[in-house]
Structure formats: structure tokens, C-alpha cells
Length: 157
Image (cartoon, rainbow, N blue to C red; front, side, top):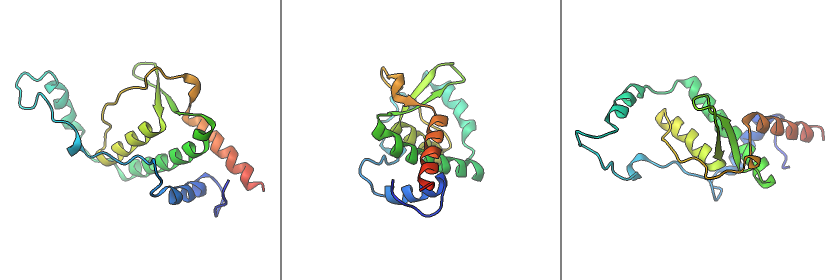
């Protein structure tokens, strides 16, 4: 593990993010302009019209506190990926409160979703992982505990 100033996961996050800048394989945010056009645009019988009307109420920006939390989550995610991807972990599993099913997110998909939430205040729908192996994914709490363990081990020396 490389050395970094300070101790704890936040110090490691700052060090890692400084090293991550420009690293090949880093997912960049995708602007809305590059998305394909809506095939039902201006169609009075658009089946999704009711859904988009509900979305109009969601245009309030995220708060400064939510923004800070998302930035911290992105920093943590970068650390978790750096520590766990080389060990074969493909991403994070999240238990969905709406459908009571686990959702498997590869590292890049979760990063892109958090970046989208940060920039737009909401996430676009995405395709779920195809036939994921549950053994390849860990929880956010597992990641946090693993990173804390690595930090404690490195701080001991």
C-alpha cells in the first residue's frame, strides 16, 4: 500500500483521488445531448407522458449537504474499487426497498449513477447486471469495513 499523509480512510481517499486523475479506465459523465432522440417526442399518445409529468416536480437542485455526501460516496467508492477489484470483487450489491430484491452494480455503473445524481439531481434508468454471480459483489458496509481494516493495518506500521 502506498504511503499517504494523515491516517484514516478520508486521508487515503484524498491521496487516491489525486492519483486517479486521468487514470485510464475512469468513467466520464455522459451528457444528455448524446442520448438518442425520444421516438415519441411531440406525440399526443405518448405512453410515457404520465411518467414525465411526474418528473417535472423533481427539478429542485440537491442541497449542499447532499452534494457533500455524494462527493464523499464517490471518493469512498474509488477507494473500495482500488482495494477490492484486484481481489475479484466486481461491485456492490444493494438491497432494494421497493422490490425487496438485491441489485448488483458494477463499479463503473455505480460511479456513473452517483455522478448523474450529483450533476442532475436524479439518476437515469439503467439496465441491471445480466446474470450476476452474487459472490462477486459485496455490500457498502463490507467495503467500508474492509477499507477501515486496511487503513488500521497500514497505520500500525
